Length: 223
Image (cartoon, rainbow, N blue to C red):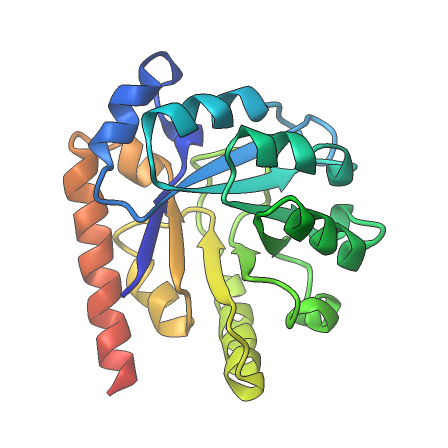
């Protein structure tokens, strides 16, 4: 079954607890952390993760879109992150950073931008729990999905299956009810959806619709 990870980047921060309750059927909560340097936007810090940890027992999927992520791993882990994902493009020592995340009792992930190839992270695939394939240029919510990235999802899925790796593939960027089937068929295990869910009149129903369409495509693909 596909996992849905609503991104709180698109939630109402003045009513964060209320919005998290609206997506209680989600398996994960996705937290986008931006620093204004690696990406052209500034969002949140560990204090929001700590606040989320107090109001939900959901798996907290923390995506660091920041420079020098090694400086902040411990803070996010202490705040309550379950998984910390860093960008390959922002890391000078990716393997060392993955090890640091694990030492802080979190699962470790690596993310790649649309123009970064699978080959650039192939050496660490056996060391991470998750790979995020970005289907927009990171930095802002509400962007349009880039269909040209779908072949990269398929390429990664093929490699994961060939090497029998126990990692999950997460797709982040412009995911909605109209493209979730294509993404699931390509090999995604986790779908991040922000504005599609929190921007809808009924976030719970939208989450359900995305999951049902993705699961239908996944089941069709497995036959």
